[in-house]
Image 1 (cartoon, helix red, strand yellow):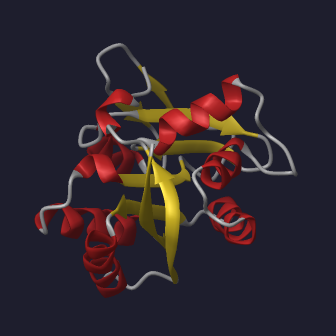
Image 2 (cartoon, rainbow, N blue to C red):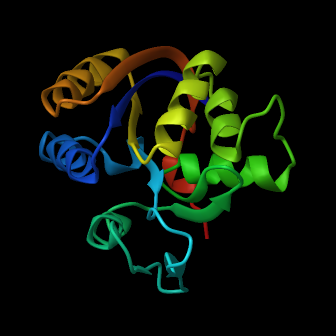
Length: 184
């Protein structure tokens, strides 16, 4: 693990998050350094999705095209139901960290698995509580980790996508080799 900086943007609409990810990709950002967290859909009565051996996800509901399109871009992902938050999708290396938090029963202090994963990489708990609240209200998180210079560029790109919130966190711990942290 190495120390990096991270930029986390909160978007109220999936189209904004998708636009931000596309802009980051167009600017040459390594897709393995981008994480997206969001809910699958609003209602519990609809089937939200399934993950199969072919690393594909199919969704029914409000955000089907959004998640389906992004799933193919990322090397790892996690689909799970979190108490209180509901169905959640995590794309990127953060999915492996969330899975580790769940498997290791590392949850504590009232945080969800996603919250515990963010705290474990150095995101301040007060910020994590606000990010969890944003996801709970159907917002989307786009997180980019990298060197300070990379994060300065990422922050400018994310700001241009009009997030409702944009934070810079220094000294977070990111996997040294993102490819080694796939969620199977």
